[in-house]
Each structure stands twice: as structure tokens, then as C-alpha cells.
Length: 234
Image 1 (cartoon, helix red, strand yellow):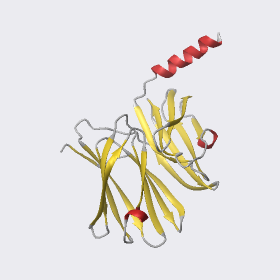
Image 2: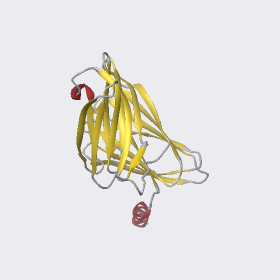
Image 3: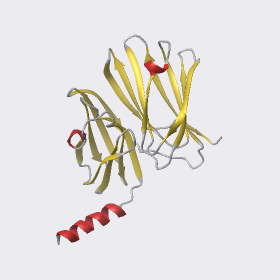
Image 4: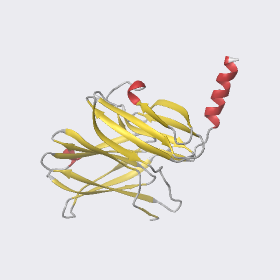
């Protein structure tokens, strides 16, 4: 009987097909913690699959949950992830329904930031490139860094254009990211001057950005950018 139940559970986990991928940033490196609150906004029960990858794209954890209508659940990653220098990067939540996701980030057990993700990763059939943007401050006691995450089964090619407050292109970065991998850009290392401005990011497939703002060496705010502001077919 137990064997039959195990086989049934395995079959169920294999045949579940999810229409939407919610993707966002987490940090469970030493002294850092991330907790995820997920709410079902649908009138029907929804299966959800949580996938956690390290920065090199290795799957660290998978969990399938059924959420009744308007039910909420908290995933405390510290219970399933052993901290290491690579335990940061991409989380994916797959579902057919509408989810409300709230992510809490802690540093030395103190909550330093909380962000909300209410939209899944979207694609455009006519897009050759997807464009994302973020503001940054890299001056005085303010610093900015950001993670670029690839929530796709294919490699992403991308370019990062860093502009000053006056609109001058200060630096361009380019490269590729393998499926479910993440890369981190520390502007304090990339820029030779202190300034603020905007960063334009171009990618060949949809990506997710996790932006960290620091004040006096400590995390001040973490934002997830999951929406592209434009696509181009050329």
C-alpha cells in the first residue's frame, strides 16, 4: 500500500503542468535568511511547486503544496537550505492560479527588507530582446548591487548599460547566463566614480533582477524586478 502511494505521488509530481512561473531573488548565504509568504488569490485550490536554485543553477530544494482558496503558507528557507557562499539567486514558484508572494529578507536575524511579487514572468512571441531598467545610487554611504537571474531552460544573452545622472554611458557589460544560474553586479567595483543614474538591461529571454540597496554598509532595501518595460523585434 505504501509503495502504491509513493508511486501515485511520483506520477502526480511528474504530470503537474503549471501555466505561470513566478520568479524572484533570495539570499541564504551565511548570516542571511529569506522567508516566502505565498497566498492563493483564486477561488479554487491550486497546486504550487517551489523550486530553489543556488547561484550556479543547482536545484537545492523542491516542494509541492496544495493551497485552498485564499489560504496562505510560509516557506522558511533556513529550514531546507544549508548556508554557503553560493546559496543565493533564483526562486521559482509555479502555479496555474493567481498568487500573492511576499518575500522577507533578514540579516543577522533582523528583517532588513520586504518585497512583493504579484506578477509571473511573461514572454512576448514577437520579442527578440527584452528590456529592463533599474535606478542606482553609488555615492557616499549609498551603494547598489544587483543579481541577474535566468528563470529559463535556455541560455540567456544579455547586455548591461550603466548611465550617469547626466546620461553619459559609463560602462557596458555583456555575457551569457546558463539556465537557472545567477550573476551579481557590484557597482562599487564596476564604476570608477561616485554617481547615480539608471541602468538599462537587454536580454534575449525574460530575466529577473534582484536589486540590493546598501546604506553605510548594511542592506537598506531589496527589490525584485520581474517586468520588462519594452520589447524589440530587432
